[in-house]
Image (cartoon, rainbow, N blue to C red; front, top):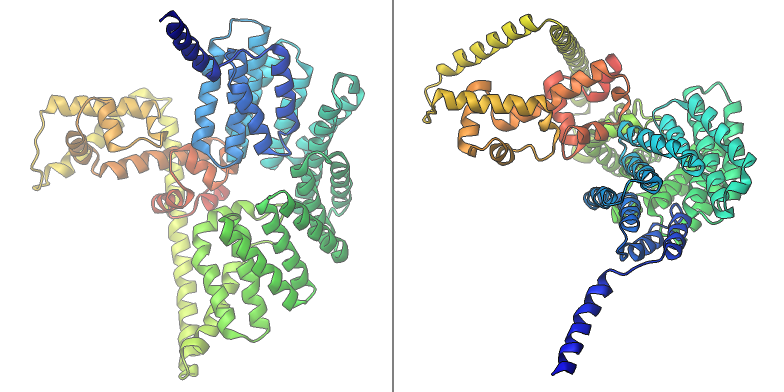
Length: 584
């Protein structure tokens, strides 16, 4: 009997220890080094080592493992898991006793949080996390960590267009690393030089794209891309990015032969390492070269390859969109109306969905051409061939109608634009006035009372309200709603009717009734208006906010996608977010 009990006890204990085990400090440091070695080169391999570290029972090990995994899951597009891991990292961090070791771990985790936010395109939040991490690493004099975070801050500056500042910071960091080689391992040294030289190359190229007359900037970009390739033998992602961008530099210089060879090398290397996005872009860029050099048959081959890769992997919608633009142009040149019409229609059917994204990506390093008048040209191609595909008679009538239609559209467009501008300017003045009211509390209170009176006056006239609630209870619900507004709870993606009803301890029927009665709109309209008003206010008062992509702004106020956000924003202001920002 004792033997059986001993066996069962051993079995239970063995199961418990198989889940969590004690990892020595030496094993932890080895796993940490392996994770950092594969950090940029191979996310899947790095994740394997992070999972091994996660089996530890040590809170420090668990904090690091979850922090670094938040970056890896975000790179794989799994935002939900990335955010879950980031919260777990702080959970384990709090269990570590106060010490320099804990301060160092705080720096690591905030840096990883910044990297995850940067990957999501939330540059402002990324900068905030980096600065917090920098504060902790500076407290304990962690030179390596300070270098890493300053490098990441330089990349944020580049992403928002502060190219000169980014170049200055990256050059300083490269010089610092060179002067302190003995502090770093060989792998760390190569990693820093690879990343910082790539950053310099993209900063110079992006700076050139805003100053096309300064051709010497391309020479600097070429120099740093070549240095990146030399330092990136063990960092495949950086090597592919540098080669792809180097091809773009050759393209800008009209050295099409060198650009062609470089893009072929990118496709080969990217296919070997299953980096689909790079395959798609390189095929698009080859198509662009052959279009520019009037080798239309070859251009079509590579544009179609780009389409296939984008369709299969559901990646790089911009490359897919623009490849259809050029295919329509080529078929127009080759006098093939059916195909010209087909591709112009694909372009126009998809353009509105990606309009906001295109406005942000217009100067993207991986694309040589701009996008200013693409839709206009596609509309003309579509109209040109639509009659050949669907009509066989009435050409003169068609041309007359088309001319009248264009004149009508031009007039309508001018009127709509003027109307939208008036609406937008009125909104800006309204929000500026609201900002001034914050400095005059008495006026603000008086104004609020007037607004409530207007809503009550309007909705007392409604005869279709079948529900009646005690006025004190209504006021309590409104009071709680306003408290949630003041805390900006509406920025949460979960700010739905059931969620808010639960939060303020009422039911959805009462909440919906009160919002309809007091605010004159459905709960969904009320929620969207709060979000859009927040964005308008931020755009007016925060110049950095205007530089964010439409996707990033949508995420910051809890919209699930940029398309629905852009529609709501246009409905409120009469213009797109990008147009509103540029007009401010």
